[in-house]
Amino acid sequence: MIRPFWTLRSRMSWSTLDAFIEELPEQAAAVRDKLRGGDGTYCLRTENRTLFLQLQDGNLSILDSVPGEADCTVEASEQQLLELLNGKGSPLKMLMLGQIRVKGDRLRLMKLAALA
Image (tube, helix red, strand yellow):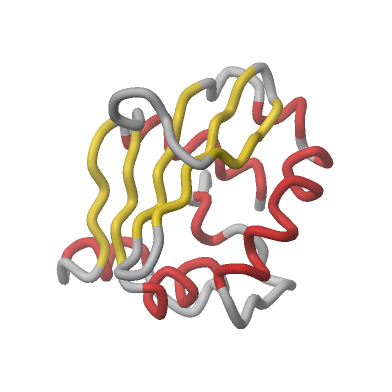
């Protein structure tokens, strides 16, 4: 089963979004081959910040902005996003309840499941 990128690691727990961002490049480098083919731009948006990710040929970069719109955008409160990242929330349930919103190419988003 392919898991969404927001369920990145069941063995890891992040207390802040900054902690997640700090570990993301190292984690992505470890699974670079699995990330190939998911090229695109991704946006994580909370009430306090917007994070842009670019995946190109298996390399993940954190950006300040992207030209135009991201290929896929995930919007949630920071608390709800952390619940998803820490595996404490059900992505499907949160989507159905409107606690998170996904805009754009959802299939492209699933490629980031390799980070799990």
